Length: 209
Ligand SMILES: [Zn+2]
Image (tube, rainbow, N blue to C red):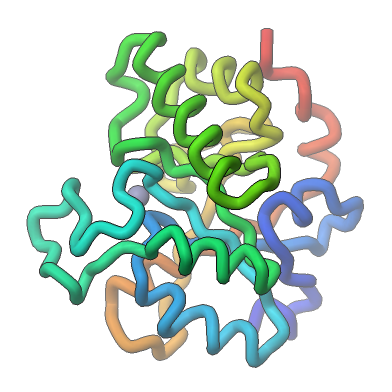
């Protein structure tokens, strides 16, 4: 559907660096195992690779600690081995912090730990630089944006619901429905970002001050 509209789908970091304003990314937050079981085969069959944002301290857990409705095993989170497998298949793994926290409500030192330690953990696991960040609940503050730039991320996502801005560290995303995937939750998690390269160029690197 997105491709038919003339957009090229790629990982978030590739789309961020792409000169075309027809670049788009499919992103999945939280690192649920059903991303691998449902979304990955579906998208691979279309030649599409996405980006998965992982809560670093929750890798491999039987269920996420931040969701009261979660059911053990049904809602299990991707393991380290599965994340390596996804990385090797060309998917991008980004940070969704160490814990599923509301960054804007935390002191700067704790935000720094959330952004910095999760990045380091994923880099140790995958052996590559982790450049992409998605804020849990889409929540961030000017301090969060500054820290993300200082710590070496190139861009970060919020959600359209939370507003966003022209900054590379407050990129908006939109939720899509109607893909016919097996659960409502899966559909809600299937998000895509479309943006204008001109906005990136104007603002990238300028948010660390
Ligand atoms: Zn999340």
